[in-house]
Image (cartoon, rainbow, N blue to C red; front, top):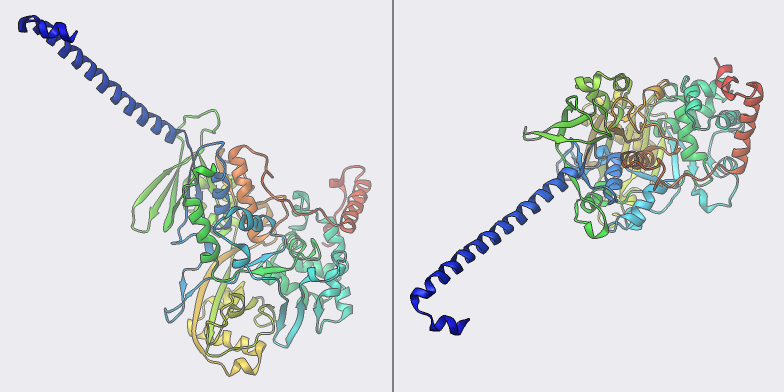
Length: 584
């Protein structure tokens, strides 16, 4: 072809040149068109992929909300756009730091945070699922704990697992060192075994025992006043954050069984080293925000300092998997005043009862539903968290202590932060955390009066060495309605994991009803996984570590009660009377 072209005349080459130009233009156009189509196809595919992702909005960034986000992002069976919204500037809920001392020089958090022996799922998270957290570096070892009244040391709780194994109940009775409570008074608690045998954590048991207060249950079963005041009331005040007269018997039995009686070692506890926001929550958030595609996991977005203000519903159209009135968007306001609209295929409410109550009162979409109007009955109780910084070293016999009798109806705990956080060599003095529960009567005091009261209380507990010390700084954190209040009758107002009012609404937190049997942080974490399982269409208990089975003597007692109720009820236990029925 080259030789032929070289021998041809210019006029003969003109048609060929024109043909080549035309062909080259067509090929260029074709290539350009193909390239553009490829880019458009890629963009369309990307947009389709984004649209195909299930949009999940999680309201609340405490244990429940973070657990739900973690579970949803740890799977790749379904593409997710996961967004966690929280009004606070940093995640972690009320347990997160972010407070300052009165001098402004030191950072503080609300409370000191414990992790009990049966927090199996949280321990699994820290040990196996967070590569940037070493559990033994962020949690203390087990240690003895004290109990004080204005009269002095009342009891010492040992590390139960370091003692010879005994049946639960017997172990706690023999190994707990009561310094002044007589054996006869302790023996008066024996009739409570009947209540623990009947209360099996089922919805039916909850409904029965939720009718009365724990104090009424104890009185009518013959528990001595001294045993109640010195053993049970302090446990309820620091475990359920309200007096036994104002706490559901069902909640008290469930909490006490999980924390104290499930096994000999149930009450053994490890405490957070350092501020939990720095040691656990921030690494957890960093991990969820990171690119984990190589691990088969998805990213999570966090919108902090962002308050939920409203909800939108679908406009009447429906899909195969959602009800006509599902929530379609969550409306928020940022701290700068910007309105943010988050489209939602699923919404998880992971807040406390008081916050849920507030959302219902301020949303016409939610308040139209009877299910949500029930939540207006949910209440919280106030917490006063304080830290005092002393100018000298104080020898505290026990680094963690429960206290009672200092203020009527108010629970109290005392922690030696310098010991628990391992900073004795770094601090010239001593840092003490003193927290009060059901503390509305104290929240109204001014800061100086609170510091004076706290110092007086710890002087009473720790004696002359503390009285000689001076307070050089203090942190005062007021948290009205901060923790859930399990008052009698509250069970019927608690949410289930899955809403019946909206097809795409779910709940997580320690106020949520669950059959797992756990309490507090562990319960919030477990219900977060349950909410994620419900969104993904999985079994409720998938990826959840269950509590151990009841010990043989406990199972035998519950079986005997169940058999007796079947006989009395002519085959139907629900027709048989309950212990509660004889107490009215």
